[in-house]
Length: 51
Image (tube, rainbow, N blue to C red; front, side):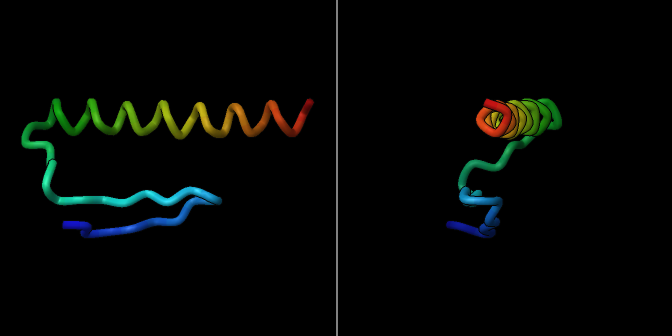
């Protein structure tokens, strides 16, 4: 079930409750992965603007 939706620029982040992390380690891994994806997106975006 979708519990939240966020619009960031042209992207949409949807949060579902059917795959919730159960441990602090799982949460940290998920947040690290999301951070890497988000950072890569803005890094690529910056490269486009300076090219």
